[in-house]
Image (tube, rainbow, N blue to C red; front, side, top):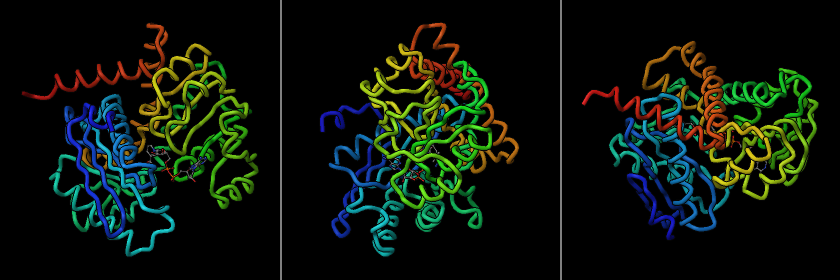
Length: 353
Ligand code: NAI
Ligand code: PHE
């Protein structure tokens, strides 16, 4: 629990529900650029401390994502630590869990806005919205922006093209792209890469998704082979913490570009990737398409065209990250943090006192 207690963020809300055996965490990392925003993740955790810790790391990633993307929001995140796998929970239990989570969000009175993340959907956002207004990504029929997944994938694809050119791979045609996780984002990233002529290698833990992949003509590898299968571009689109220092030292890829939040298990992994000449697109830059979709449509009143244009701009932001990395001899992760800080300072300077 030591790491949990030493956290530098602004606010932690925790609650437990004995009836369902569920624990709730909301963490607000920073409010410097505006109200905090970040999705709700529902998953099982080994311990409550792990869930609190994960919420903090994910909230910090949201702060960086908003800042580097020039979005006027702070960073936050919710973790719902489930008593059993999400798919095994009956509807009554799940709706009770969502109702309690919505109460928690509502008590923060707009300090924190939620949205979809792993194991939560637009339909779940509609349910939260029965209790609280502070919800992005409700279904389009209910007046929300709908799922952010397709736009997240569009941004990851832009990042993939920029990274491929940056590291000398050139176009994606004929390049081996390994997508880990064929969910809402990864499935679409794989499709976009295949349409660009890439040779797809994929993995997932859900059988139906692999059947779909085989029908698409893609090669399937077991989940445990994701980080040992040679490829040109490794695209982690499942969960975070995929690349620790040991894996960074061995990963048989030329580039890493994915949607998963917090791909690197620790900062040293980023430095090792750099030493090995592996081009890493920092996740909080590459996966900002979801934030552009939700905050753009629901806070800033952007049109579809503006959201698409800003999402395409992820490539330009990433090119700046690569330049800062090269000019200073630092990892792209460190470079992206510098760019996020510069942009946050510029935005704060522009906020009237
Ligand atoms: P999802 O839950 O739809 O997809 C995740 C996929 O990964 C599922 O198909 C799951 O079976 C698979 N998976 C889980 N463990 C695996 C393993 N060990 N090996 C291989 N596959 C595994 O989630 P979604 O929405 O596609 O998000 C994916 C990642 O992108 C998450 O880390 C999320 O935080 C991040 N992200 C999502 C955004 C969005 O708009 N949905 C925006 C920004 C980031
Ligand atoms: N959960 C997604 C992300 O990590 C989408 C999201 C963005 C949700 C902003 C809420 C607010 O980017």
